[in-house]
Length: 441
Image (cartoon, rainbow, N blue to C red; front, side):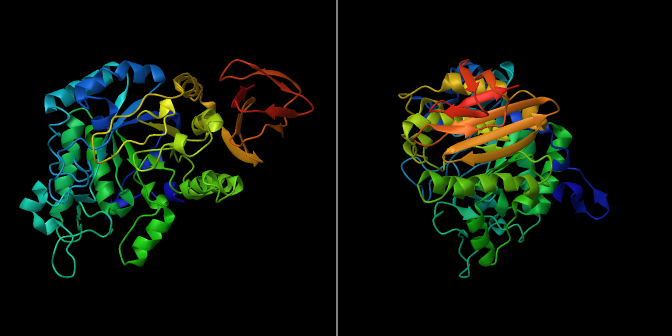
């Protein structure tokens, strides 16, 4: 297993990486912010005005999509994708100044939260400073022109880590720069496409500056990974990524989740995929549970309104850390554009109280140390945690009809931790209607 094979990056030198990832990271609540569209102004200063609300929501980590200047060549939309970066050492002037950004870092820290930055080391914009000064760092197509290995990413050009060893050092210096400015963690875009030896060296270098830096991997879907490998390119599996990263997106289960939501798959397949993580990955693995993000549409546009509370509560109850995408707490189906000015909409059913309560419940060590089980009955997800003589039970109806569920708890009356209402267990069964149920005994 990965956590037993302590990763090597130099002959004879053994280093511990995600082997030491603390289980406590499973309680993290990460709030993903696209600064351009999080507020009407779309600036660091405007985001600062929203920090008290994010803290009250229970946020531990404010994760920012890329904040750097965007290339002008081959732009998508009117303002371009933040993932087509022109200069790793600067901030996008549309968002503010570097002083504004450091003030934002300080304000987040003052409220007891951490700052996570999006790191894009697979590619840059075609007109990036690195391409101007070091074209030897980049991938070249058969005709010698720059390009990328994924067809629809036409606004970027890929790095080629095999061409010049200087590339790795240059990119590690970028991480060290932002770490010294106070950034607490990094989310690596399409990390599956980055070389493992580079990632190991990068983590080691950053840990020497801040050993508590949080490392989040955006791995890719399995079919995408397989296609990439079949094209002759190197790509890292989820298990390989766990030798470097503390947390990983749950894209390994996303196809099953999406299929169920769209009516093309079963809840059974999704549950089986989630439970397979228990034996596929290191014992201390941490998955980042997210129902939506900047790449995928709003959950409110995909499921019946009456099931939204159950889906969100389950996202917190499920084993691992949880992420909410900017504005997701308002249940609005509109998904903001990545390429244009398109502020989030705060009109809709406000699930902030549910999210706040769920995030607080997840602080208990039971949820990062206990034995986790996940089942289903019809369209009801049934989760449980057990640690010594303490147990938690979650019942989440993601279907249209109420259902009686056998739970195996002693008959009696229990308090639903989400709304403080009474829940009756009779003859070992519970009636599960629209409201999610979270019990502890």
